Length: 282
Image (cartoon, rainbow, N blue to C red; front, side, top):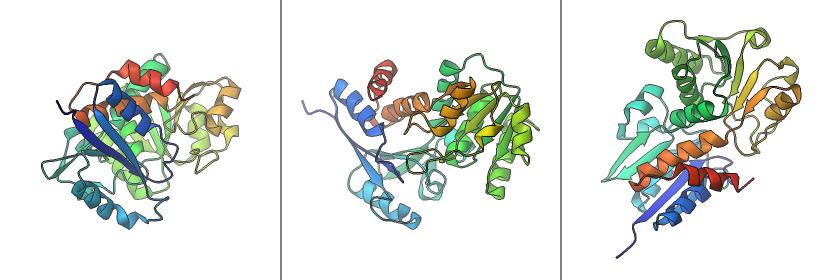
């Protein structure tokens, strides 16, 4: 009997340290699947953002089963797809594309991934007010997860004013008026906040640094990252030094991959096995 074959990939920038290929391939091996996962790094290929349609066309023509999508393409890919899941449509961002029967169907597994990480890593933290940095594709998914997990007031800071407003309008329509606002005084909002979530790419291996002055952090904050390479960003390191409770990007990475594996393969993934494999990298 021929083993089922899955060919998947990740499209993004600066993704050479991604653990996603190993997570998928290891779980595929455990389930006796022929599972290949390839990185399609626009930086390595020296392509600008306008190459996204060609990359998607090439993957579809060469028989890819599906693609994960990461920074900076999670929103740019929307008009290139044939269908969206209800969650992806509501969030306005896609991180997983299933290629089947000539169609491109977009899903969002980031929201589920972050929510699961928050439940497991910071189950009992205060959620009255949370500051979120970034309102891009990942930021949109995280914002939906935060309000879905009981954050009362979410204050968004984003350099693109139109993108911030679109996300706030989306969130308030879904969760209720006033649940999300655009911030103007980051230091002041942080001083009154229970939590801080960074969804910008600042802190990644390719974009080192912190997305805000670390002097603005305080010990009452909990601090979460969605970046996982490196697992300990400069922001998390500074927060831990102050005694803040922290959440790194590992749980979001694993649980979004669990769902993506299931979408690509049609099989249930073993989440504990994938967590253990991720942990073995550190």
